[in-house]
Every structure is written in structure tokens, then in C-alpha cells.
Length: 128
Image (spheres, rainbow, N blue to C red):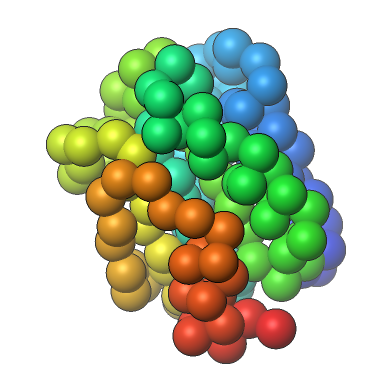
């Protein structure tokens, strides 16, 4: 699978997770793909009904489109499915975790994270 297909695939998962109540199969598939192999990935763990998470939703959607093929942006609603919260060891939402291309966690943030901060983190990680 080339990078564009990988970004498209995770983009579709992110869109499904943001816009629809996903079933267990979709959530499990997205969780298994995060972080995306060979691509800088930001995983946002939150909930569709959490106020800071709601404020971040349009930012994540915008960045997912802007960085398609260069970085992956993935959202998990941990109120609908607590498994990703356990997997990533979070206790506060929203929490954003940035992974390098090798899948190693390089940065973790709790609370609202604005667009400029996310963009700067991507730049710091070599995403153009």
C-alpha cells in the first residue's frame, strides 16, 4: 500500500469515527491501524459530547485534509469505546498523542490543542 492509499484509508476511518457512531468492527480496524505505519500520526482521544473535543473536531477535519498523504490524524471517541483509552493509557480527554514514522510516541498533550500548535508539532516532526 502506498502512502496516499494509507492516508486515504486512515482518513476514511477518521471521518467515520468523527461523523458516525462506528460499530465495533470499524473501531477495531481503526485502532489496529493507529499509529499509521510509515507516517507521522496524531491520535486524538476524546468524545463527541466533550466541549473541548467538539471545539477540536473542525480543526482535526481540516488538518486531516491538509495533511493527507503526509501525516495521519485519527480520532477515537473513548466514551463510545473505552478500549483506545486503555490501549493508549489516557485518563483525561481530550488527549493528543503524536507518533513518529516508526510508530514511537514523541509527544503527548492533555486538553484542547489548537491548530497552530498541531501544525508546529507536525513541522517539528519533519512533516512539510
